[in-house]
Length: 488
Ligand code: BG6
Figure 1: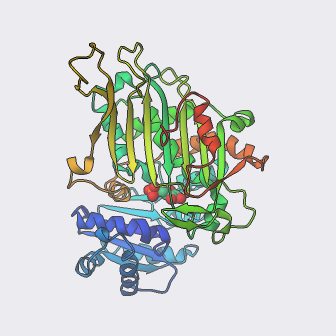
Figure 2 (figure 1 turned 90 degrees about the vertical axis):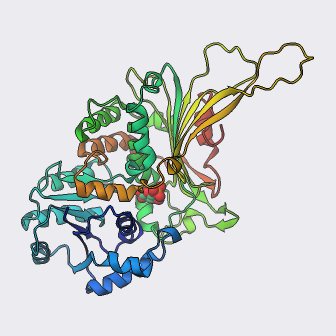
Figure 3 (figure 1 turned 135 degrees about the vertical axis):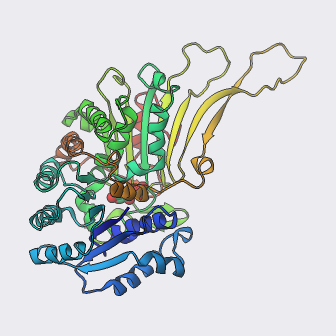
């Protein structure tokens, strides 16, 4: 297959931190067709040679196993090119068109890794230059808008140039291998589906904890906050994957229709339920891995007195027959004790206990980070009897876990999230991309939270870096008689 992959924002953070390393891994794994060209577009007055040298240096920052050797980079770099463009100038799109017209390819993907306020301009200019024909797809990075109205403005602008099938909204959490396995577990096996409902499940906890702070992105983050950065997209997308009904087929729209239904079934918030069921926090200085770290307000480019949340925990419900009354707890934060992302499905206890002792009910843990895999916690008999002399006594049970380590099971086939998403975009596999109606519905649901916070500066709770967030977040779960996943 031949392709052209154009990165707008070719010298930006996302391009060198995530996209180019992912492409390099795809190249190393032999999955990136060699007849493809990658074009980085940016404002600097550079050429291919200069860009390649710059990129080679950047890629040295990758963890050692993912770093290209000099030899590897030289070969990989043959596919990489550079074009200087000012994205607001129409003539520059003709330059791009000229470059693309040098050859006929099977597919062209325009990846918009720029600030989203440029998306409408870029799309309009692409359309005006005729760069929106049916062999072209456009990938839109998050954040897609700041609220419902701005997301709709972007979607309208994109939609006036590209069809829904051509516009791929990326949520890289959907590319994580465990999320694929959640689909496989639920819809490729008969075992879980009968139990996957309110009668057997007590609660579901989705945790996306990071130990990193806001790093160099202080200005962006301060305008964004954890609700927009992680909950509106990543956490809600994971929730849809857990809660959706079995789709009639594995087609992209069949899956996305079901995900949309879940988003529409989420119980709406009002000011009262926001105060009761949503906790927001901001990190203060603390210690992580033995190192002292700054508080949020001391971070670069963050204004003193900022009210931006770096932590959110909330309790929500999916109002339908399958899930009525089952709490879903979503949680995310920066500068937490550990980098740790997982979905925990806590089952109900057995209806009638016959073994002595208090036993933790079954739980299924879908681990996303740092390692991915599935763990099923079961109770088992040890088979040990204390003494033949003692009175016959009932067996006591212990908790064991059935551990599926996908790295061991499929050692050669694993691909990272961005690698997967980029290869899917080139191949036109849309299953893992978010449709505009899903994305707008997610905004519709979080907006009452943003509104409530706008009128309340009191509810932001401090937490020390290196902890699991404000105690009120644990209280949210404890109030229902459950324990938080990290603590339970
Ligand atoms: C991004 C957020 O979407 O996801 C970042 O903007 C966050 O703030 C990142 O750090 C987390 O992704 P991952 O894959 O490293 O967990």
